[in-house]
Image 1 (spheres, rainbow, N blue to C red):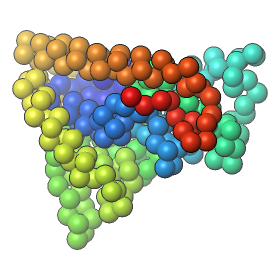
Image 2: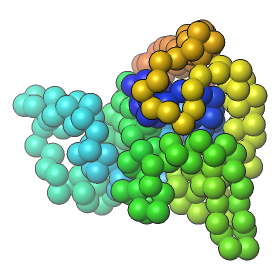
Image 3: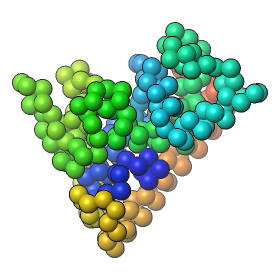
Image 4: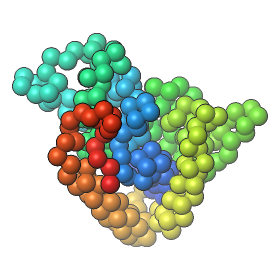
Length: 241
């Protein structure tokens, strides 16, 4: 979460719950970093046409891409225009998608989506989603299609609440996650304030648990000998647990 900057320097359970609940849903409880329906990749699945903007905008992604574009590396010779038109080149789309499924990158640009990505790639109205996190679960007025809090964050990730078949799963994930992290304490609404002892303890314990889950996931992800190869029935996905 620190690498992703999903909390923007503020502490408190609401921002933690927002990010972790969305990641829980988007990754099917940390079992996959790929969405076969639209070839989305990452901790908050971004679709292929969004990748080039993320690579341009996130320093760690830009640096990693530059290294992979050096002579002799996998993406040498790939122009920016090819990335813009990536949906017309399924081979390139497949291999860039696999690269973005690297957990060291996937959680970084997942966090970028909160303060910047949604406003750039979905709509300006989304703004900084970390502020919506402070609202809590919020609500959705279906009649006027107005949403706040976690509902608004969900809209700015998926694009439309009416068509999000997994919306109820997102809400259940928020309820379950908030029930765990609400005791972490901390300071909400103030940036740059030192953490209280309870917040520090909560973050340390919660962070260790989260890291353990990610380590197990990564070990399983890379334990498959053919994770970088394409198989029609797997749609280029790593073997799932």
